[in-house]
Length: 433
Image 1: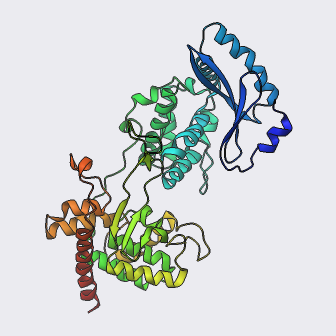
Image 2: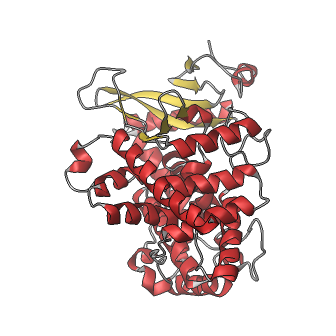
């Protein structure tokens, strides 16, 4: 039975138990997803093999428009052409004609960043594109909406001089380091666009970071145990919210990444066996091995760390205030469904660091510096901790070990965490005495 507009509207944007397909006529059909997204499909045989071609989504392509495409597709087959190739070239030609820098970046955010990267990385990409490409920053306005004024043209018409002028503008608005950050993101976007034949202009790929700005500086700041102890005591004196204070303390104790601790959820914490399991990043969870049976997938091992005694004590403290549901470090009180933001934590650390400088001339410390402190401190005590601290920091091991050594070293990690806390505790007691 042929499809009708009323039947299509009945399925559109409605939840279903599972995806399903419905035939129309003349080899035309629809595929309806669980969330109610409707895609047009054309089934055909080419060189004796069955195949199907996606024509677009309903209602962007109406029932009558989808049916109108069928005669041309049949003609392709009669002429010995693959409808997929013909349709693909037609789409690429149209995309190239109208593709702009703005359009390419937005498409990359949707098709690459949103699928392959973690939520925090996606947010960083989106913020960068919004400010430097769309010229619509969330906070501080730009002096000039340069891209809208100077790069509002087909992407393939952008010249090398246009790019140089663009990065000079970024430097004038912010810094050479920011120009380097934007450059690296644009290289990823354009490389993807060229591979998919959305654009053919690749002149920016000939540039290097030094041509347009500066690469981010490699961090060298490694707080001493004394400096970490002073930071700890300054945190204790602060009137900041408990989740902010305890979050920064856990970063000091665990040497974990800012984002990893901020995104910690109670469901990730096994408080019986005292193990913290960090979920596998999006897009890397499962893979089908060659030759495996249907449904047989291999899962990537998650990152696991033991929960040392002091960390357990701090977790119990925050649980009494905010409960044990959702994020451990809630962004806005106990009813928040979001984690504390990186800006909130960085601002707090900056305030504490500023006080230490004014009182004791201790140079600025940022959360990431405590990762260097953990490895440096433990390896100075004994070089045996080198491999263990790599696991503690969430790094892949070097050489063949990264392929074959999948041990978590939980007992050794716990010993190292407790050793670090014992050394830090001694420094805190010295300062207080």
